[in-house]
Each structure stands twice: as C-alpha cells, then as structure tokens.
Image 1 (cartoon, helix red, strand yellow):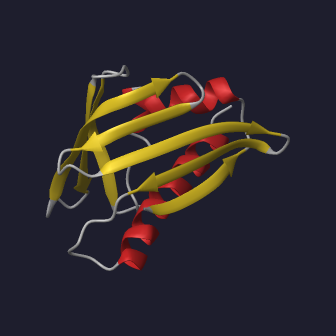
Image 2 (tube, helix red, strand yellow):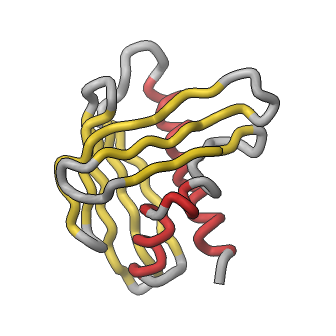
Length: 135
C-alpha cells in the first residue's frame, strides 16, 4: 500500500461534504491546473458506486476514475475497490490542527510507485487548497 496524508484547516463536516458531494468533487479531483473534473457522480453508501471524469482542459485526454464502496462511516472512513480491483482506504480524523486525511491505496504495476504517490498527493493537495479556500 502507498499512503499519503494532509491536514485540512476546516471542520469535519465541511471536509466530509467537500470530499463527497459531486458539486465539490468537480472542483478538486485532478492533479494539475491543466486538468479538470467535468463530471462526478457519487452514491455514498456501502455497495454504492462513484465515478469521476478527469480530463485535460485542452481535450487531448480523459478517463473515468470509478469504483464501489466497501465501507462508509460518516466523518470517519471510506474504503472502496477501484474499477481495476485495487483497494483504497481513507480515514478522516479530527485533530487540534484540523482534519487529518490519510489515504492508502494499492499501487498499479505500470507506473513507478513514486509517480503514483506524487499524483495522488497532488490531488489530495488540490482538495486541501479547495476546501480551505471556500468559507
């Protein structure tokens, strides 16, 4: 498993909402400013499915990131299986400094682990920037 982490200076309720509602997901679920997430759907419940389209703004490339939830504990944890069968575990923990998000995922085999860690961390950092910028 590869693990990434950040702390969001916001309430747990805001972090949970911004992480899970499609109207917010569209604003942060991409790794760099030349990409965006034009579509997001989320059935947030154990057995529910989600899908986010990540696309280059110039139209040159896009893909759907999707999976099925295996665990949903409001304001605490989300686990899911990605479309390719890899597992992801996310925890949300209130701390004196804000909400700590820890995300662990099984790496795929086509790209180096450091590249995967960097990409996932960039998306998590984008979430932090978005969540902290909206009051």
